[in-house]
Image (cartoon, rainbow, N blue to C red; front, side):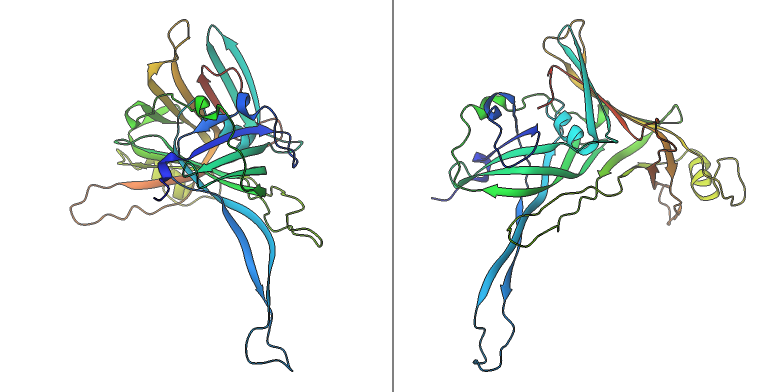
Length: 338
């Protein structure tokens, strides 16, 4: 018989990094349900070029250095999402009162970005892989009005070990919190709630993934380069203000200017159900605030008798040190981020 993909399990926790596997994985990790995705080996077969004095056939081949990377796709439940937000942004603080934990997650300006340890149980018996020195290269969140809040984490791992014994009790750490539906998500721009049809948010750390060195199969370092935070939404406009702001610079302009308008974009996601131990009753929630968001120019593109809709995209800016690029405030019943 074959191996069912649904029998697998993914365990993740942040840790200090290094090749040593975290001893507290069974108690501190969070287990995930995945829609799909895995970490794939990035490795080439090094084939020798033709040599004079041999035959017309290839004489030998060797395996070169290796890293692992891939996209992990999931429903964005709000118990586990803090782990990915911390891995993507870098800094997290928490306060807990009467069963409700409020996690404030922001960009990290100094020090090392968080590492992840990941255990991947594939097919309930095919194999169990352990990955160390894993970084979150990018995090994507999106939702449609008639769908769920979805997430995709692109991760890069320095080292993998196969044939590992599955961590006992990891299945009991499975995130069982509720799904977030588009009907309980709002998008506010410049303090005005917009009638958007969908939204997306991307945090990209642009990690280097090719720092291979002589004498080793593995990368020597994983260094993040310029950080990019972008967002977008689809909307049927009731006026031309967004288009003029994106193309001309301000919503009141009638001709192109050079300056751009920076305004706050806030995305709020709330669950239908309450946090079990919260007093008073409190919903699971995630609020993403981009205080300086600038729109990218776009075309209107009317067509036939179609109702005018357009996709608005933009970028988060950070004018100065001491200001924030993106702040995520996550409320759940988990006192610490895994």
